[in-house]
Length: 215
Image 1 (cartoon, one colour):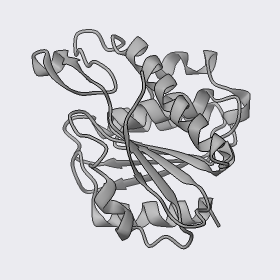
Image 2 (cartoon, one colour):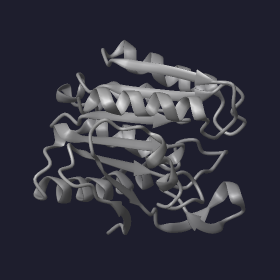
Image 3 (cartoon, rainbow, N blue to C red):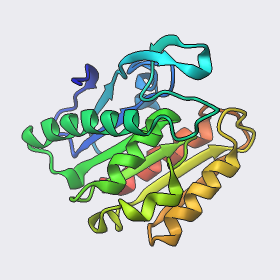
């Protein structure tokens, strides 16, 4: 699977943010947020497009999705998630070939995109600069300890969630946070009075967190 992507280059970039969109969106979804982040260092942004696939929860409709969602089979998307993570890994290697080490690459994702970002970031044999997981969860968290990479334990993780999220209830995010903390991960948690979306306060927190990563 080769992913096409929207790329926002910056002169003398201090690093790269590889940002994955949610179900039914595309790589342009978070592009407008970049100017709002008040970044202190120039960064390169890569927003890949997920492939189109039938999605069970949406009556089999074809749409951009990182994995299938079947409410009757919570783990049905496992192989799709692995394949999507591998495709994103190819983008990561392309960034490394450009001269950006993995330690200067942040994986970010919203909803489905966050699931894939966490999957890849927690299993990487070389630590990423950080993982930003927005309105999302850890897939199959009960088996997480069997697959995580020891090298990823020091990866800074930002998790943010809406208190009134109707699609991914905040309890699912909290359960994922506690599973990560139990394994020794450093998780910075933020929650907001919103649904399944982003808000100005969250955007400001994202900007501050990215500035700390690339200080």
